Image (cartoon, rainbow, N blue to C red; front, top):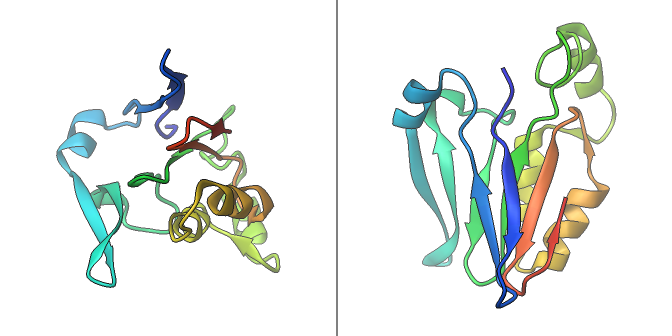
Length: 146
């Protein structure tokens, strides 16, 4: 299986829509087990995520929005017969043991804790991730990056 796919679309007014498909199998049971989680900080909403209850691990996919700042999604880049991390299980275990290597969820969580698009983009673009998945980020100001 591969994880979900997302895309950015710039509207004529300059705003950006951040869309996501649910192409991860088993699609229907996964959709039924997905909830919206509000992450609170200092008594207010910090960010909101679609959260797949069957995959509550640091390997999970993310679709999150920090209101007024940015949205973020994790996407698969699966190829061939390997796992969704494009590696054998033994290779994935080797990668996890590398100093400062992070799992997808760890990087996404660090990015979502940032207050601005630029700060989140810096986390996403400089962190060493163990898998070949990629992030899509859209700023409230109309910017976007993959």
